[in-house]
Length: 90
Image (tube, rainbow, N blue to C red; front, side, top):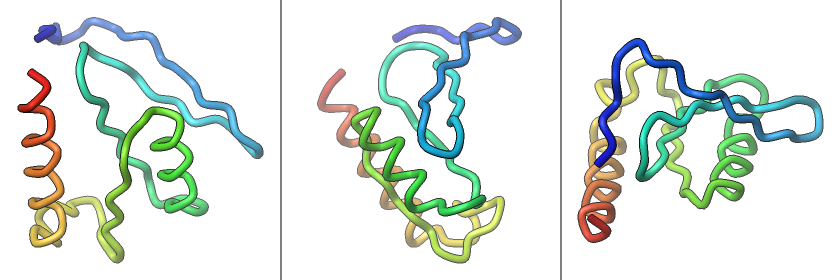
């Protein structure tokens, strides 16, 4: 596993799409977790990113800045599924 050193800058990468760009940073190796803010059409943005980066989307309707605390019944199983899937790839 790659260690992440605090204070070390990681290059920002971009996904270009009609109407703008999505910026993301990669720190380390392994699976990528992307949080998409609720601007524009978050479902479309999340699907676009997941398709390009080989991920899956978990939408939490009505969630604010703390979806893990507001909707643990949705978020926790998704996180556990993600971790279980990655444990098989270690």
